[in-house]
Length: 484
Image (tube, rainbow, N blue to C red; front, side, top):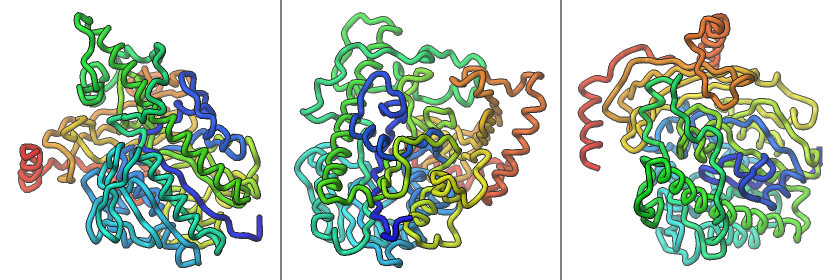
């Protein structure tokens, strides 16, 4: 290990699907600067989110804990920012710390960023153009395009504070989150027809009703604001689906192109100051995203496109270049791994494991055999996604759609019967064939059910007990829904 403590830089995007990154095999777009980072470091091929939703994932990354521990289970459950994070641990160890960009874990004295020497964050989802920022000095507008502005502010802070010991900077972008508004520089990219994924016309024939209820089909639920122009007249239903897909992907990939440019700006800044080799540079997204797979956009589900996060780590002084790691890791592991690289003890509350040793060929703990997932925001008003938990190992995935709201903020009014799904990812990587009821998979079903129960207990979570939502819980939920 280098005797010098590394600088730490985490670029986190919002809804950036791994399969739209060149290093991960993207076939319709290019990301040369993110790929440059992968060439200099390690590409993680099996990094997964433990709750595929913006606020919960960010809370898990910061705190190194699962949603039921840090309290951020839905989009409407703000963080208690006083709880221990990898930032508070680094700051106590002498690091200077900063965050610029999307926070999205609530606003107000208890939820605003804590433990940072400098914080300057977007309001809620933030705007693409001339975004508002919140800092200890209040709210202001910053002229320009959000992806550029966030990078500008981060580099400005580094210009003033680099060279005086190690630092940790979080550059957390809004892009490429809905409503996918590209800047002028990239507005004409990807105008040629973009091929649809092989599962675009999925009819969900073996899937549960829980999956079918989701309001995520591109043809039905991308709206006029998303499209920005009206479709041509006279299109059939299938033609409209293809037209919407093309418009969606054009703008999404244009936003990704701007992110890629700005990753390059940060790389260039580090190289120009001879800091690149001694910086742990991490690139990730808060979750995966559907880019037409199964006819969907958005995330939330435990299916692969939503579950899988991109994660690239560069630290040339320590990590091998151009490496690929296929072990299972999650966003809950980020905190311990960052602290391990910095030589700082994790807080005893932190869950997960450091995977730094795995990348060096000297694991410090047994590698994960699988990962536990739980999506809490049942029947949300906008996407109607079902509450579910599950377990994924090297080959199989089991999902329990328990469909209960539990009185959580952001969850909806309706609840439904429990349903299960099971996938053999070796023979069915696209998850088209639910084999939960297949007699040939009876032994696998029993084994995976037991693994799920153990994984749930290991992280301190509990299964749904079958208790229905109470009237005391139902009334405020209904009030929230009807007041929107």
